[in-house]
Image 1 (cartoon, one colour):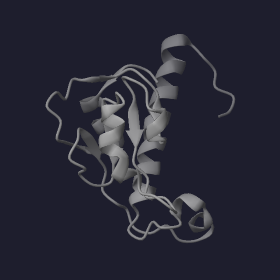
Image 2: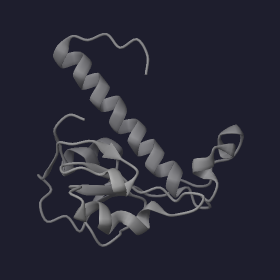
Image 3: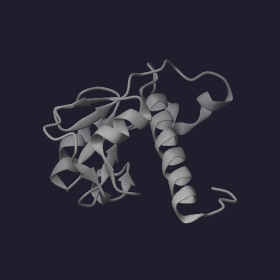
Length: 135
């Protein structure tokens, strides 16, 4: 991850800040979807999974050192919230991540993560004259 503020990330992913006291707080760590693996400075992804909902672990992720979470609804801790985009249909609907995604919450977080990854790889390529072959 490159160093970005919560405000910058919200702009990149089309989200809004919720329960954020300092929009200029910087994410300097890794993006993680397992709250047990969050490291200080990181960003936690809240996915509604087949067995658990990552939104329920947002507080734990912040306690572990995450700067904020990327979620599909407010969770009472610093969050970048992206609106659900509707249930994924077709071949993609078979992915486990969408198993319990009745309103498109997981799809919204996946799209936001994709937008963030695109921004970071583009910036790294521009700043360091890198050629990205594949991801």
